Image (tube, rainbow, N blue to C red; front, side, top):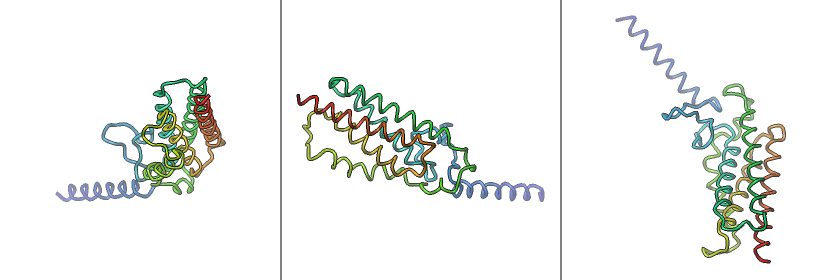
Length: 193
């Protein structure tokens, strides 16, 4: 009986240590019940998520690409160029996340953005949408292109707020995102001709 009590106390202490580690060590997270690693990307908006701005930017870029693919016209090739630039930005950000050291091996700066990503995408989206939409109502021409521009602006904002440069990959992703925005603006101008 005494051995069983000692074993239970040891297990309880181990559980407490593990729980504390999950709460206070940046990037260390429990895997969800699905068995997928939360570091894999989408749906990993946990309280201690690493690099939430990079992950939020990837989400916004994917949403922008989806909107562009649903657009009815090619706009003289500008939509396709914007899609290519968006894909480049996503690839650069994937490289950023792949270059991150595994949990516990990171620098203190990794904790600076912890817990910010889940709310930032949604908080800034309404503000960005209003600024980009420019008063256009529900009947705006080419709503997918306008929505893609809003998503790209949100991705750019997230990238600017990210704590690290990732050896230039974040900056390259930002340049590609800006290029995609310019291509979509040209697409809208092309339609006016």
